[in-house]
Length: 474
Image (tube, rainbow, N blue to C red; front, side):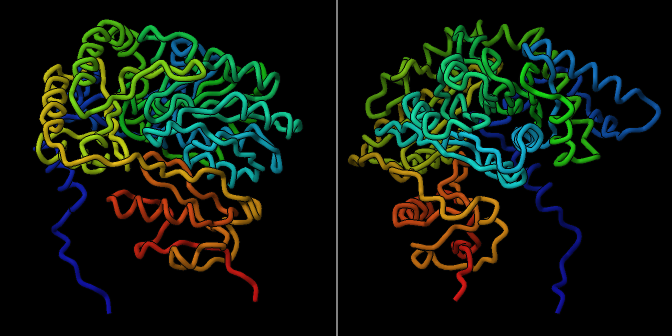
């Protein structure tokens, strides 16, 4: 029997309006920080409705878009740039689909975003995953170790490209030219969703344009465009633009939002005229806040420089309260409920906050006061928990075969020894714990359980926390 619903509700719209009316200090995406990083034209009361248009003949939509993308390429030191209205994921999937052929072998840092696995599936590629270096006291990836990459290159000399994530979600960045030298004439693709701004903060040598063939910006994350927008940038020496365009066309909507496209164009202008300068000008103020937080008893802040010439993006503050007996999830809950501060995300060990150089100074002071107050709530001490298993699971069948195989849903305990049929990833940050076709072990199941019990979200499970596995032929 069909359930009857009252149609006078708009639950999602109403929830968004509720949040807008009772805002929390925004230490999260999108990077415009509730409008502080937007150009003033966006504040006209009816502007969004008026420019929500499609490809009508009344305006030069294609000419304007082409020029806007050319301006972006010039600003971000690329030969070509493509606007994305389906997030950085669109750029990653489109690039993998367009520039590689089915069966091609690519090296992939294991701390990749789950969109990389989707791109590998659609393109029919053969990934060779490279173990990521983790920071033991934080349980977070520090980036791709050069020694591990050298070993994989020697083991797989027929690889066609390398895909790395740089910087990480917590802002740990590795020097790009090192990867360029190691990958030689192969295609280097950089997921720079959380980067692109480091040079503006006086950190040179860590931006993707200095060595990558393709790099993707999640422009809404740190630079301030609307949510769901991004850019794909290209140096064309090793890339055939028509093939790349074909890959994007295969997975891109034919009705892109011109509100989102305009947001990217407006954001580039804002950064060029004002925003880029603010990254430099407000950095000393930010560093003082970081120092004050670091002095709080019981709270630890992720600081650099780190091993292997790694640096920390100062505009991300990652905090650990293990010495106070608090997990990252618990600390994030306290920040939200007691101090009306909204972090970007948390996990078992840490809580990450994103800061914009146009952010209200009162927000930074409120964060310091909150950390100071939390530091007085000593509840004991807990050991750091590394949620990522010590090694990459064995690939039993190809990724694409695992995705399209007949599958069945089983409990977590029953899944041990079976082959994964879904991407399993704690979210955020969306780093795959299991990839389709991989063997599920006790370590992976334990990590899933710990995340769920601590209040985290694991993508790829069903509502009953069951996991999809490849159906066995009996």
